Image 1 (tube, helix red, strand yellow):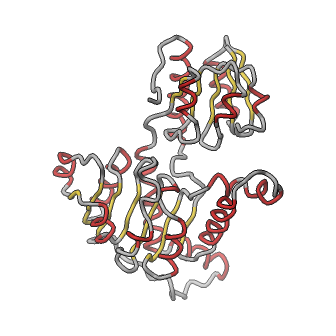
Image 2: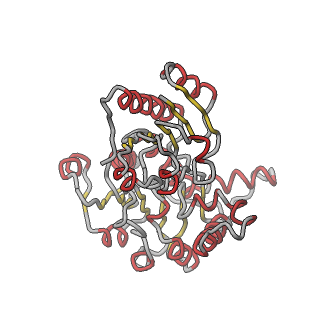
Image 3: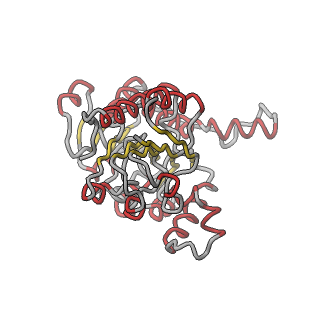
Length: 338
C-alpha cells in the first residue's frame, strides 16, 4: 500500500505515521497537494492532506491508483467529494476534535477585543510608558448579550464559558438543542433576532452552500451599533465586503477573525502576484485586497487559522487520522464523509 502525506508535519508526527504503517510505502511531501504536484503521488493508493490542499477533479484524475483520502481536519470542502465518489474513492475526516480548544480561543479573541490587550501590549513594547491609558478603556462581559450562531460541540462549549462570565446568551441553530438550552438558561431565536440583539456575535456553523455569506450586509445593518463579531469557523460565512462596510460605518465595533474568506488565496499571495497568467479569477485578487484592508484596521484582530492548534488537539487529529487510514486498510473504514 502506497501512502502519500501532504502538508507540513513535524518529525515526531512523521515517525508516528511511519510506525503505524510500517508495512506500507510512505512518502512525505512538505507542500500542499494541488494540480501542479500530483506527480509526487501518482502511484499512491492513499493520500493524507490538510485543509490547504486542493483536491479537485483535475487532481483526482491525475491519481489513477487512488482509493482513499484522509483529511487531517473536520472540514472537507477543499476535496471534490462528489467526484471522488463517482471514481469509487472514499474520503474520511476527523469529525470532532478541539471543541474545547476552539471555544477557548474564541474567548481569547473576545477578551482581546473587550480589553484592548494586544493594543496595550504593543503600546508598552513601543513606548515603555505605564502612565498612558487613552484609548485603552474596555468593557465588561458581565451582563452583555452573546449571540452564538451554531450550537454544535464548539458552540455549546462557548455557551458554558459565557455562562461563567455572567453573560446573557441567545443562539441560532437549524437544529436547536432545547434540553441543552434549558439546562444552560439560554434561548434559541431566529438568525435576524440574534444578530439584532447581541453585543457580541460568535460563529460556529459549518460551511455549506446554504451558509455562504450567512453574515451579510442585510443583517449587518440590523446589528447594534458597536457590536462585535468573532469568527473561528469558516471565512466564507461572512461576506467580506459587508464586514468592511460595517466596520467603516461604525456598525461593527470590532472583529476577531481566525478565518478569512479566500484565506487560501491570501496564503498564496506571492504566487498570485508573481504569476499574472496563473488562471486565477479577478475575484481572487478582490478578496486578497479586502483581506489586506481588514489586516490594517486597528479594531480587527486576525490570526492565521490557529484556533484548533494546541498539543492536545493535534494529538487527537493524528490519532483519528491513523484510525481512519488503518480502518480503510483493514476494510473497516470509519469516519467516512457521506
